[in-house]
Length: 399
Image (tube, rainbow, N blue to C red; front, side, top):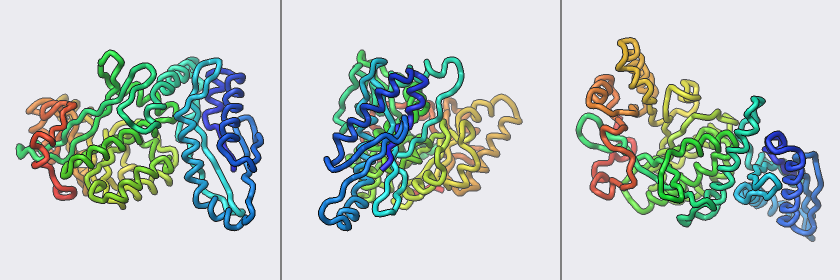
């Protein structure tokens, strides 16, 4: 087995070689503690550990068992390490581990691949990394531990607000309700998750947040039969397939839940491994879930992604609607985006509807599904528990 500290160079640059070396020592200690006593762990470089696991009396039988169970154990070890920050002289640091393994001469796939970017060379890159890490080490233990409504050491907690996507023609039909994550401070003030999301994406840790939110949305789906809900997932998270195994197992056991879950892919970060991402999206769709591309037209959301992911729903970023009111040219661009989205056979959602004029313009362009303050603001209130669920569209009925 080869175990790599994927953000070792990031830590080295941001905190210095002494801190990075101390991190490697602690990772080795935890690995030795977790493996059987017959194992042997050695250094494979500054950021890499090599381990061999000794055979028992029946090597062939043990090889079969290891081949079946070891990837699960390794993914769990990597996830647990991320959720247990390492104490250093520079403060606690979160570490992303990724593993490669082989049994009986057969190599397995990489476990817990890292999807984060390299640390930049700008003058303030190290300072930004340290600030991002300080936020991450406070939040990650809560995200990766069993959810029990807990808070971080600083008193922060995560709450879900909900906002519907409705039929703007006036029927009041609901396509689904989107879960919007908010970070609540110790004093009760609730703010945008933007800084946390961007920090975790820059660190390469955003999968932990996405998994937490999707799991919470599934909990709500289990408690509210008949409603369809959506969870946002960063495109960066699509490559880390092993971290989703528990959630995919839940959906496989409950196809009725899967059919009512929409995965909204937000593309504020690049897809690290497109082959893995495509395979993951295909797997999710095979379970009955629907895929939405969020904020289409900005960030990394492109026509290429539409061709690759074949989404069921395309959400046009509010930027284009805001600009559509400025000139005939921009209004034409919005109409063309709607036509492009419809050409993929997808439901089209216009985001950022705030005025009746905007709502009417969107309808005239052929996009009846709308989301925005005109119809409903994000709210802690679960609207489907107040009668909205009766208006919800069954999956696949609105085209």
